[in-house]
Image (tube, rainbow, N blue to C red; front, top):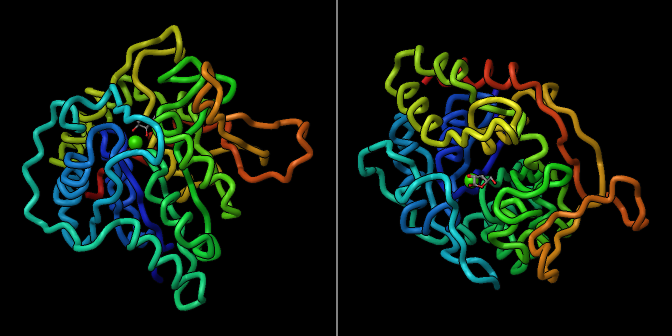
Length: 314
Ligand code: BDR
Ligand code: CA
């Protein structure tokens, strides 16, 4: 049995690295490629970090492409929680596996177009960073939406408000215009917003379970997650940092540990105070068709159980 075909579009990024490891450890998924984008750190770092993580998992067979180095329209903002390198203080060696020739946008476009034409199975696109690569691909060839089985995107914030501005989540705030293009592309979208990811809290006990696996990958993962620790119990309800991006991969593996609901979601690209805010129409006030499935809750024990089990396989 071959796995579900996915493309991971990412800005590694500490929690991106854990998400990539979770995907690499999961035979249910067939990773067609990893696309790097500027986000947590500049593209110069994310394109290297993606390969560092593949090499950590001894998966040098995964094609890694470099994508967009800046957002579509707005001035560039980088992340705040992944350190200068993007991988915290974790020293993963420089990769020896080559980057693929060609641009990530071309890879997305070519792969999704062939799926839209029925030449291959439709593809699930997992976005873990700003949505620039996918938005550029969709702007160039809107018909590629027909080749997308699902977009599963870490992004947005609703009731819990923002993590980078009072009301905006970082991945959306970093490129709201691209988010708007993707959200209204017609492709089916599942959103993993802060409302849900704040529940995926990497408490010291959960990180210890990962470290105790004792393998090089598990030790590196525990070190990465520890760097990411936000330690803001007043906000999260306990000690530890929320592990955002791996929830996207977990949703593909065990959808039943999540709950959510369908809604219309839009992005504010104009408001001086709410720029990048994701607006969800829970009660259908706009009368517009739903364009997203918004995840609201995760069973955190199950999530960390899955993550620990899978990391132990690498
Ligand atoms: C998102 O922003 C980045 O810092 C993380 O990698 C995650 O994708 C959380 O807001
Ligand atoms: Ca990310």
